[in-house]
Image 1 (cartoon, rainbow, N blue to C red):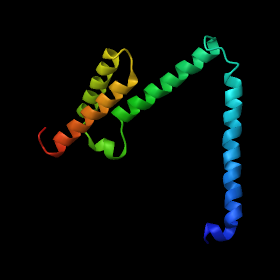
Image 2: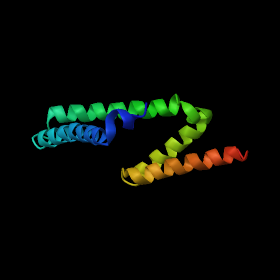
Image 3: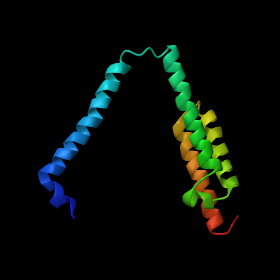
Image 4: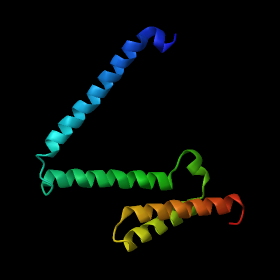
Length: 119
């Protein structure tokens, strides 16, 4: 059956409203709680370290054990792009944008060169 037949137009709008409400309730709660958190406190630092650790693990997994189309690229291309991005990140005083653009560009150039069998 078509979802329009089951829910009807108003039912779908109502469902969208409920989903939006659920999203914004948690955003409001987060904003309210965030105003009371001390950024220099031990809990904040612990959560910050946890977030950075999870991000580092995710990036490591993507580079070392990729899935999908990225798994078809050589590991050396991924590592060279990572190294180039990190060097530019450090050279630009820890500015993420130049490092990210560099890493993506280097990876794109290496993938294109391999596609045209230059490498």
